[in-house]
Length: 332
Image 1 (spheres, helix red, strand yellow):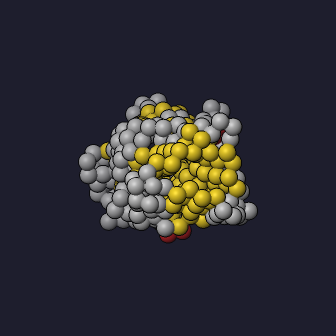
Image 2 (tube, rainbow, N blue to C red; image 1 turned 60 degrees about the vertical axis):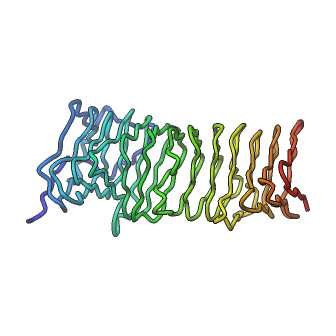
Image 3 (spheres, rainbow, N blue to C red; image 1 turned 30 degrees about the vertical axis):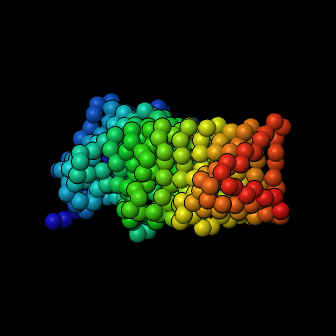
């Protein structure tokens, strides 16, 4: 069957900035819940390049009637709700922009979002308001990136499932109600990049990333355990903050800690616990900041916490480091 094309008459060359959502002078506002249906796998939701502006689905949108990958070749802007019908998979060849307080939902057999395939790899999920994640979003192909613009994501114990994604980047957002299995599914440990992100924990959290990259300030909040697997890389002037009552736990699989560029980034331990009962922790470069009472615990397993000669340790006024068990703490 030949592919159908649904033309929304959108101007695809318009520059999309958070401050311009939406442009009332030119953009079309659709104020009723909209269903795009009678689609088949391989069909396109596309654009003719018209100049009158963009189409904003202010009451939400449902993609229905497909049984495979639907190619979205124009920016899509959604308020309130985006619903994926059974077996629908969206291949985003342009950005998906959630332009208000939005929930993402689907039935139990759908929820697939592909962030670009082939030459279209690089589409993003852009937020201009808070988001409720009412289903596990299955992300396939390409690099999965969320630009949060300072907004929050209520994960409702759901997760992102990057079954064939190459990487997962979160930028400038706050996440809460995160499931214990983590931001992405344990079966697919991909490369995760956190850039100015706050993780507000309501339970323990396993970061099942093949490699965790820290950009800007990344904060762990809440009296729970944040477990790191495999490796962690910290970029210039970037810090991983463990706030009061939180715990850093190193899984036995954790092997590599690296610092990039001029190595001005590091860790900020603020009234937290560092659990090295399963793995030694050596920080040879960068910076380590201790604030308030920091407990280093090794479960009486004779583990070591070592600050190497090229790492600068900052002990803030009133800070104390408590060694619990048989921990050896060394500053070289």
